[in-house]
Image (cartoon, rainbow over all chains, first blue to last red; front, top):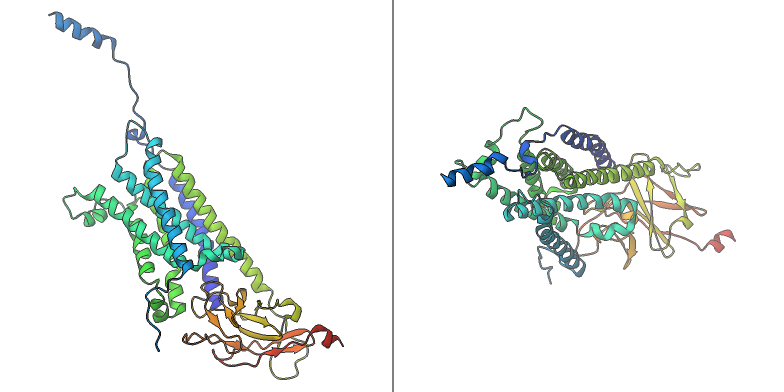
Length: 59
Length: 360
């Protein structure tokens, strides 16, 4: 009984010691970075956009 | 007079153990909720509900990692034994925290589904043919189911009802639960998070848990290889094996003698007497030979179960029994008959003469 339990234990951990790191490495290696994951970047306003409203107000 | 039934045999150690575990879990969750917003992307702030779900999820994962390390650590160093004493309560608390994580996640992500939110968990993603995009929720549900079964059957009632071999076989599935949780995180959170911290934590957990189990397993295998040698001179029909020298057994303690069939026998010395018992505690298969004699009884190092060394019976009102073995002395050598007696069979202890008397 004792030996069977120890053998099962040892066998399970041998399998897990291969499976778990392989699974983790594979999941990290091929993960995809979607555009939504990137931080938002503030862009400068186009030069034309700043002038246009002024012209509209004058009119 | 009768023994009153108590669902949990509380004592000071158990209360301290549970209070420490609960306090550590609560402190971690509160700290996570307080500190984590400081590390997040300010342009995409995480809601309080999601933060709480993350806090409970990571807490349960770290607790399970710790629980799985306790077993091999006790094999490597006996100073970790106190951690093992109330490990089942630790597991039940972990299960409760994992369950809270699951209820938070279901409420956050599936409450507005046209389907029942519990149905939606399984129906929203059915890409079982992919690796990336695999419905990682399935792994989480499976792991939670296993943890719930383990928590529900953790009580000693189930241990007695199912018998230790079946109970142990069921509870070994905690490793499967751990593997499922690693898959759940790897295909879930690690796919959507840019923060490398979670990946590092999961990686360290896997390395630590598998590494400790492999090292402990290797040490146990080495112990099994050093089986007791047969005694050269057998005066009767018993296949006596050499258990060791009298001096190798410290007073009040035992030594573990591996036999060729893979079983182990614990040989104890108490005063001028020697007795041998099966090394397996009838409660949870704890290693009796690593325990000590307290109040005249062999005490299991795991949960403190007592057995009389002469007959392997637990003192009344308890009914546990373990197998006994015959011993005899050949000078200062202890010889052991490797054939076990029925559990609870009385065997006259062997008397040890002081070294000076033998030498004279």
